[in-house]
Each structure stands twice: as structure tokens, then as C-alpha cells.
Length: 222
Image 1 (cartoon, rainbow, N blue to C red):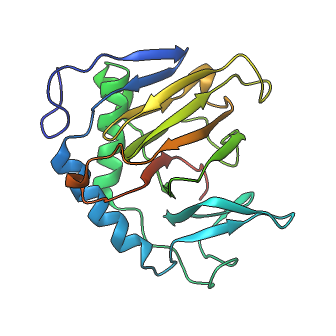
Image 2 (image 1 turned 120 degrees about the horizontal axis):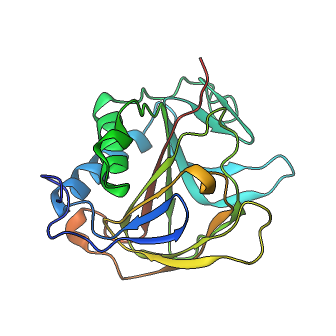
Image 3 (image 1 turned 120 degrees about the vertical axis):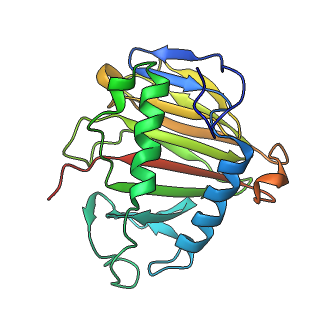
């Protein structure tokens, strides 16, 4: 059954790989609006939304702000030493609860969310031209699942294998309100965003254009 305050009718799940689940329309419009408002607050600081600079000098096309721990290629720190040296905003308890509900619903097992305690969130904003290359989320010291929430414009999300950036992979369209979880044998699968489809989002979410992606993770750090 759908969870109160999230989606409406029971969504049709797809499973592109073992341990990976796509739940369309999981977030209600009201929940999306609240997340957009929260993301705007986090984007203002104490560490502001910014384009991350990579060690070799490249600059990511997405803009990012972090909670709990600051992701700095390729490590986590409590302070944003590559931005302004400030300590990142705290990871709120209500976001932990959201992650727990997401796991329980995605895996259709209430026990799946028990004990899941994400302590960092990477919030990425994509404008119409931004993409994300194929990569693994492997800077964490934990194998707990990653919970990904989408708001705004639809994107083409490429979900691959654990061995390489190439085939086999599956392209999944992630629309506003969608939930995507990957854990178990797919926890360290390569994945990326090949395209954003401008104008496909609903301004009623509070986001006039672009795409927000909120990923919840367990760092495994003290």
C-alpha cells in the first residue's frame, strides 16, 4: 500500500538490476514542494550551492550542496575546505525518516528501513544542459543502499553494472516525484545522467525549471 503523504495510487515498480528499484511518483506534490523549499534554504549556506571542482581542474556541470558531511572529491569532511571552510548544515532527523520510508516502500518490506540511518545527502541541481558522467558511489565506508529522489524536469538516468562504465546498462526516465534505490549487489553499480528534458517538470513543485536530485547515503564515518 502507498504510504500516507507520499504518492497516490500504488506505483508500478521496475527493477533494472538486482537490488535496484524504481518507484515512479513516490513523492506527493506537497512533499515535493516541502523538499524544494528545504533545498533552497540549504543552498544559501552555511556552505552554498556551487559547481564542484575536480582534482584535475575540471568543473562539474551540476551544482551541489551537502548535508551532514561535505563531499569533496573524493572524500567526506565535516567542513567545506574547498569552498569556504564552513561546517556543513546538519542532517535533519526528518530526512532520516524519509530514507527509512523510501527503503521500506521500494523493497516492499517494512524491515528494510529499520536501522537505516543516512548521515549525508548530496543535493544536485541540474539545469537543462547539465549531465553526470558514469561513476560509482564508493567514497562511503558503508554498503548501505543509496536513496535517490527526483524533483523537477525528467532526466535520462543510466544505470549500469559494477565492473565498468560500459554495457550492460539500462536507461531509466526519472520524473518528478520518482524514487530510485540501489543496494545489495547493485550498490556499487556505475550510473549517471545522460540528459535532462527541459520543460517537463511541474512548476507547482516550486521549481520553475531544472531538476533537483537528493541522494541519501550512509558514510560509515564516525
